[in-house]
Image (cartoon, rainbow, N blue to C red; front, top):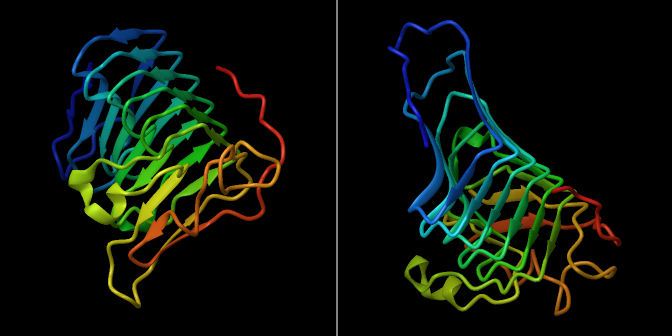
Length: 231
C-alpha cells in the first residue's frame, strides 16, 4: 500500500493523518510503502502501527521522502529482502520487531539535512545483513535502547567491496565523505547480545571494525541486559 502525496506546493493543505493499523502484507515486492516528494514542511503525518510484513522480496516497509513526520510503532517485519528501507528524514522507528530478513534489518539510504532518524526500543535480530546499514550521508541518527544481536552482518557486495567483506556487524556505517566532513551516529545504550557490549560473537559488533570512510558510531555506554520489547 502506498500513501499518495496530495499536496500542491507551495500551498499547504489542512493537516492530514494517514493511519495504517493492524494490516498484513505477505509475499509482495514491497509490503508497505510511504512516499512524499516535497522538500518543505506540510501538515501531514503517516503512522504505521500493529502491521505485519513477511516474505516480501524487496522490503517489508519502504519509506521515503522528507518534509513530513512518519512514525512506526509496534510493527513486525520478518523474512523480507530488507526489513525497513528508509530514504528521508523526520522519522521515528520505535518498538518494532525486525527479524530474520535476508538483507539488512534496517537500511538508511540518507537522512537528509542532518535531521536524522530516531530508532529506539526495537528488537533487530537474526538478519542476514547488518542489523542497521547506514549508507553515505546517513548522518546524525539516534539508535538507542534497541536489542541488536544475532545479525550475520554481511553487506551486499554491489554496495562496495570494502563493505562487502563486513561480517558480524549489528550496525555498519559508511561515511562516504572526505576527511573534514565526518559522519557521526549515536548508538548508545543498545544491547548487543552480550553484557560486555559490542564485539566478537556472541555479540554483534559496531563502531570500530564496522565504520568506514570517516564514519563514527558512538556505542558507549551500552546496555548489559536484554530489553523487554513487544512485539
